[in-house]
Length: 238
Image 1 (cartoon, rainbow, N blue to C red):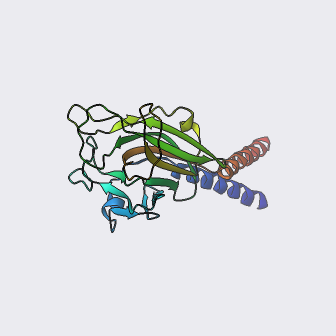
Image 2 (cartoon, helix red, strand yellow):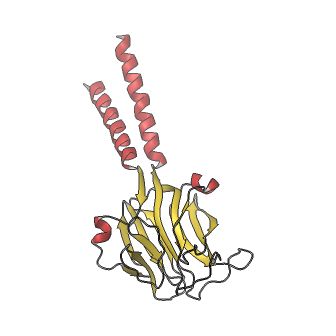
Image 3 (spheres, helix red, strand yellow):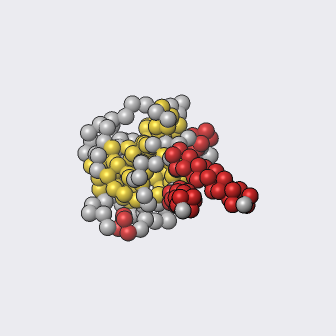
């Protein structure tokens, strides 16, 4: 009787581990769906958060500029010149604001790609001039890692358009507990310059993220598989 109990306990443990891992699947943070549609407000001050596809997203206002973020809608725009090319809703980082992303269940996660655009605070018509870089800063293993990408300037129509960023290099291999997205204005050399002028704004969409099971979950599954294997060997030897 005791052996049967142990066997059932191990099987239950393995199923629990598998269930935990199956729930930690890839997701696309696309700012569409009921969670977004049911928000009380689509404009966020600093430290205001909302949930989306199992992740917690928090608007950050490091310079105290007021409104730090908003949901952009394809049929309306809360700023002077919203970018084109989004299939649905997207996130706007406003007035030098940033967006912090963490998993709602506290899991680590990876980022493999995203779409982004510069957002001008005023309507401009300057052709192909680049104004900013999109900056990713993530905490992994207690250390902070950062990378950035040049945001294209206006197209031939004098409008900004979403661009896809799918080659993140070593950054895509890191397991983050928190990821921050911001933008910075650049000089003629393409380097970031000081923020705080309310000119650094960005649009963000389609973040491909994958939650990473905790090490304890993998260990539980491995232990359960070893235990089940041992039980089956004993039963076969009888």
